[in-house]
Image (tube, rainbow, N blue to C red; front, side, top):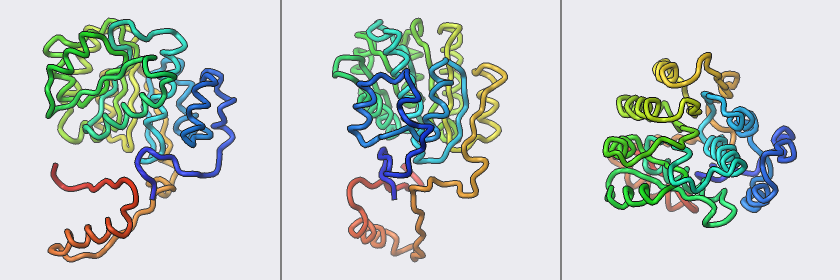
Length: 277
């Protein structure tokens, strides 16, 4: 099984070699290689130029395929190349459906720094004080990452300034809208479109693209919409680096069975998905 946030060692695709992407500076390449990332995965090298060229794009790929780095890397390199950091207002916003995903995106953005002070990342989500987040926003941040409800709160309070915003990313857009956040997403994107720059770039990344995701995209993304689907031609709809195993277990034994599984196979970090929070 593949651990969250870790790219397993697989056969290197020559199309993903770093020398094919002159926009990625040598220091960034060295940093990626230290993390064991020796080349870009398909979703990463097939979207890099489009994102770098500031095209609106909707991307569909498997869970565990590397979508987070696919938008974080070109986003950071573009802002770095054009010296857009430390303007006092966010240059990019990333929306995520859950706190855990928002923190994963923040971890990736921080890992791409050349030094600790190069740029700042603020992560906002519910369940914690909004005052501390407001203070950091007013001090100035470069990348703004958050869950839809808390991002909407900041916008309604007037804490977010759109003047320097260059890019907005919706990560796991299908889950975000499927979990009942459609209205929040529409309000956030509507506020950005109304108060932000006209040349705003919007990118969507998702494991599935149902029709209602297309409807949202048609409202807020440039048309005709560029869609990159890396799943449609695959018979296996899950990542090749992830094993799926099923255990037939009586309902009343599920907790003890889960405990046994974690003891036997829970090496490192594990994520347990449940039907409720």
